[in-house]
Image (tube, rainbow, N blue to C red; front, side):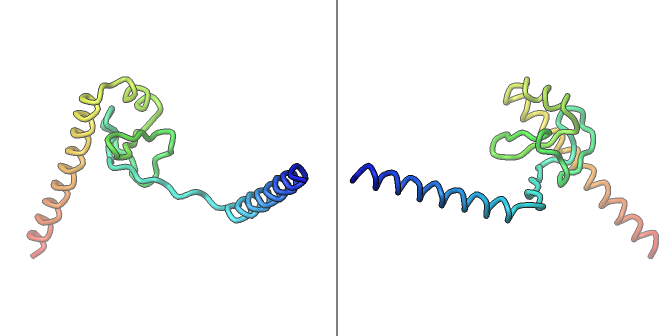
Amino acid sequence: MARILSCRTTALAALILTIGLAACEHHLKGKTPPRLKVVNSFSPITYNRIDPNNVPPEYMRTFKGQIVGFCCANCVAQWDRLTDEQRQERLDKAMSKAAKETTEGTKGTENAEKVGS
């Protein structure tokens, strides 16, 4: 009797799992998963500009709880060979380059406003 009950329970569980997976697949069909945003706008290897909102997952690495983006597979491979200290130095430099560019862009806007006045 216990064996029959066990077989029925197993069959019921398998049926529920199958229906659940089919519903999940149907729900996600045609939809793309959300994109992750990286913390940097310059690659910490080449310092080339990247779009933080459009970095492919294979060009991302997690470092100290942050998602870091790269411009190409070669940069990812080089990053993977660095020590944590070297990674932090590279990321800091990439982030300061972005901050410097933002500051210079703001100064240019302020000067343009003064000239126009």
